[in-house]
Image (spheres, helix red, strand yellow):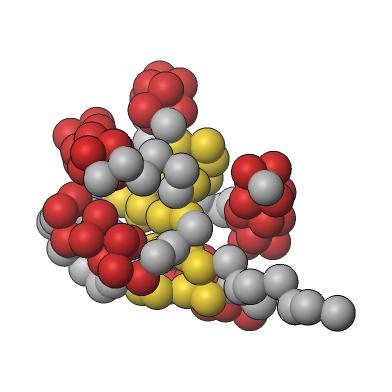
Length: 135
C-alpha cells in the first residue's frame, strides 16, 4: 500500500505585522496533524511569499495578518500566483478582518478565512478536505 504524500503548507506573515504567535500556533498544529509546514517568518512581501511557495512546491498557502493591510497584500499574492500559472494552490487566511472584508477576501480566491479563536483542528480538516476535493 502506497503512502499518500504529505500535504505541504506554507504559512506566511505578509507586510509589517510583527505579531506571529497565531501563525506559529497554526503552523505547529498543522505539523502535528501530519502536514509538512514551511513557516517563512515575519515581514514577508507578496513576492517573497510566492517565490517560497513555488520553490517549496506547496499545496496550500496560509497568510496570517493583523495589520489591516490584507486588501492591499492579498490581491498581490493572487496576482503573482496567477502570473506563475499556479492558481491551483489553496489559499486561506487567518487574522483579524472586518466582517465586510470576508466576502471580498473569498472573492479573491481565499477558500477559508479564520479569525481569532478558530479551532486548529478545524483548519487542518479544512485543508485536508480542500486538497482532497482537488483530486
